[in-house]
Length: 341
Image (spheres, rainbow, N blue to C red):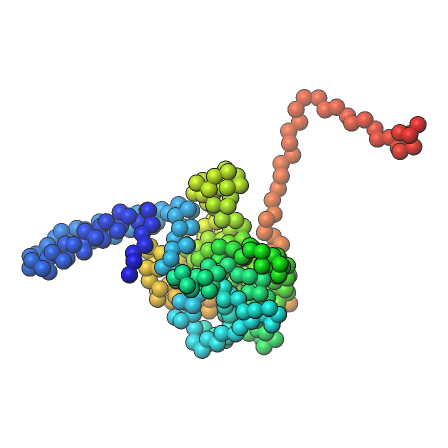
């Protein structure tokens, strides 16, 4: 299996290779290297903690995009039973970038919906690299309304760089499909939870993200634009992506402070891809805990709380500009008749 190493992970990889070589040498030559092995193990653990407890926003973006990171189906295989996938938007096609269906998490029957990426080139082409077409969002809405009809809570797994911006998507009204989802999710009469498990890119993420609770994994991100896109606009150079990532406040910690998300779900040291099972167990507990809280809320109160949750986002104040020098009064406006004379 090919090992994918990020730039900031190289010191850890070098120590792991040294440790493996020492163990191999000890086995092959039948010599006692336990002291050296223990020293490297301790140094390895210390290095991991130093690196992964002080990650920059850009490094967390890189972890969110890690090709070995677990995707929606990886989590469903571990936290859900009896998953029945439902297909098609009943208008145009079945978009493989968004999957959804009935599943049982713990003792809760839910409608699970989310974006899915591929592991290799063939699967990525089928999944369109996790970038949905309009029919994907219309399929998601159809399943949400089905869940509403049968009083089943909705759980959305967000992991997309953004909605597909191609000609075909524009011809089939991608912006309108997302806008309709925003409107309909706001008044959906069933509890809903969104979990950002990787990338949360722009309207492509928000199209299934207007929920009663928004959870985010520790190394995921949620942003109106990618760091590269922001850098290209503001600095005219995508090389400034790291600076843009810090300015955008897109990490889980920043989003929690800004009240954009409701809870941060911890990941194993090194990222979710280091231990699928541990991450899935933590994720399952968070989902069930929030579902239990939402299920007992009266529907009218739930809708009111959802409305207030999103209305308060983006509120800001602006200071009045300081006056400099004498302020000249503008001339009194003249009527059209006076101007004509």
